[in-house]
Image 1 (cartoon, one colour):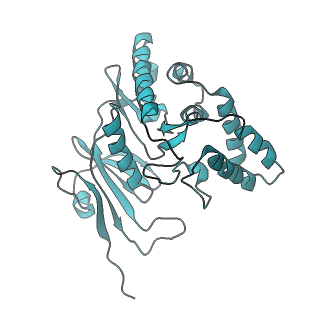
Image 2 (cartoon, helix red, strand yellow):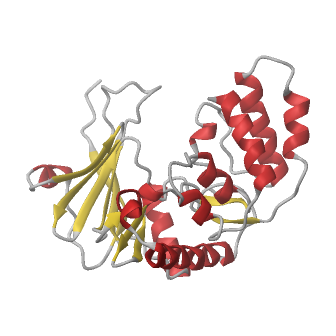
Image 3 (cartoon, rainbow, N blue to C red):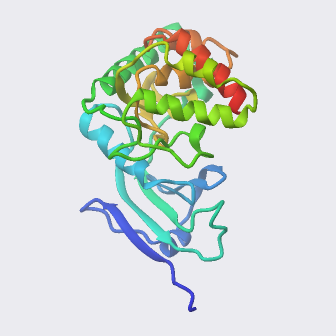
Length: 282
């Protein structure tokens, strides 16, 4: 059988943007911004970055457009997004046979991770004021009728990456049942009834959620938030999920976690439950 030549399948292209092919991009000067696993981000022009790799998803580009349409949250503009492949030599089980390319605005500023220790009291208050307003906008976006990514897509959180069922889930109960299956499969003991009871304790509304809100994903300049980036895990989740995920990754090295308590509604019980279950899973 003859080899199939890789082809571009365009999903998004702004009218004023001339598509940059992978071959053309390889000839452009590139400044590395981020590299991890199957995700690479490089700056290819003063105001343009390219995010690409076999772990990049078209759903992130669609999510950025959705957030720009429904809120004033500063997110990068998407100029184009396409898949490129297939690549027959890749291991089908572990690597996608397609690369995804997303071309985005370059967000000015520094990450909050780098700058937090340099901020004074008033500067920190200003940043958290910005975040509180943006999170309120995100939670007010209408349409939360299922749990999953945009356009009835699956849950993109790695918490389900080893399960065949990634949704979308019609209800919180269905989502919780799959989480219990994930934990029970990993922990071989008789823990399923205990976990099911913990997760069923409270019911929640479903809201749009970034799901990875950490200082590395928040850009600031002149004491204000200039961008919230990395929306690959975003989607419709129970209202506690933003808090759960933000504090799961909080390591309490500084006062970031304490400040964050003032920017979002706390869900202490739910966070403790998921932190315990995540210890079992990972």
